[in-house]
Length: 317
Image (cartoon, rainbow, N blue to C red):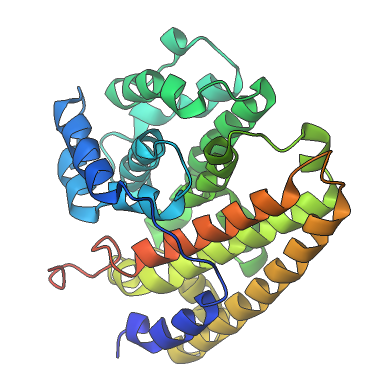
């Protein structure tokens, strides 16, 4: 039995706690995203246009950001990250060097015209103003840093992927929390709501714990749903592979991964209550932000169980 079939019922029950909403423009966002990619200067780069159309990344943004005035800029950023991430993850990637300088360009706060990396980075520089809008500079710097972290950590995994060696569990948990493409999507909740978390609050221990729990829920769910495909491709950076390398059977590793996820979801909701009560409403609208985080996590899950992205080759419809 596939791992997806083993976990689908448990995941459905786990995610029933999260609110589900969808942006009314989901179909048009999907269509507009495909048009944008097809007309962009990197449509043929790494099969970008085909990947975006096949995996319905416009629908992802509509599910994850139901209250956004326009989810299209979010869809463009997540689609960009997905395509580049696929290339960087490949041990034999021909285009990997094209994005190696991206982290430094992002965190150095250089003008967009100075970002290096060829066609993919030129596209990012072009879409960036629509993504960040008029959000606070501190939020924009954080978003850039989180995008950079994704590709910086991917470089850390490169040798293990080359030798098909899973990382140790502690290293995996810490690194996976940073390299998850869709973890960047948590930053976009503030853009969706039009208000950044005050920097001092974001740096608090409670917010850091809550953010880490949200990130773990996203990436561990992703690993369970993509395990069949990634194991078939000998990808070593997957929670099931990591637990299996600790000396248990694959079935036991899947059970342990589900137990970890269910425990982390409980911790997420416990922390959510603490966050909502920790600051006065006139200082920060925490309840609205927490609701947005829950909707984004649920939207990512709903997209993940319907997209062809995580299915093994030959099983795509």
